[in-house]
Amino acid sequence: MQAAIVMFPGTNRERDMALALQRATGRKPAILWHRDTELPAGTDLVVLPGGFSYGDYLRCGAMAAQSPIMRAIHEFAGRGGHVLGVCNGFQMLVEAGLLPGALLRNASLRFLSMDCHMRVERTDTAFTGRFQRGQVFRATMAHGDGNYFADEATLDRLEGEGLVALRYATADGQVTEAANRNGSARNIAGILSPNLRVLGLMPHPENQVDPLIDGTDGLPLFAGLAEALAPA
Image 1 (cartoon, rainbow, N blue to C red):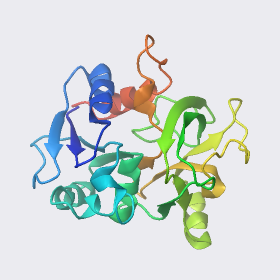
Image 2 (tube, rainbow, N blue to C red; image 1 turned 45 degrees about the vertical axis):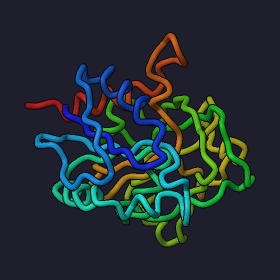
Image 3 (cartoon, one colour; image 1 turned 135 degrees about the horizontal axis):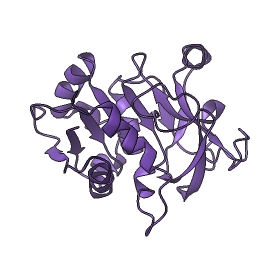
């Protein structure tokens, strides 16, 4: 699997993401700049990592969504390519129209930097194939605008089409208000595109890929991608 990570002014999680992908695939991902206009030949996965692109001016991810590289990402996704957006990357995906909804200010109006737990809602995707349905894993949230919002019709559609990939939950898998630290609608932590090839989520699974640093809860996501997107 060949991955490409896109950097924007203010991106700060590209190295963590690169290490996670290299650990899972054995290959270094390409690092692209937001002013690039093409993806490398043979790209299987595009990753929009976390950070504070353009200082979070206007709305988080709004300016990044207009960068030159986004045209190539739209075309890649349109051809069925896989795209992963984490934290600020999730914000970019909704601002670019690749996923529905919006990421609003956290309900507490405070920046949240802490561990959380997510429950896996479906496993028949490249992103979640190494998990079991209902499995809970730990990840790190670090955001001020992670409160997922969409109108009721959109939320109902996401639920009805099985496009909610991950929900905030307790360590034993209970979907509760207390587990939903940022106030996201219906405890949504991550959503999928209709073709299941674009995933946006707020917490950082790339933090948990090394047993010597913070455990390996997030490693199945990257190992699953490596397995699903490996050359035939």
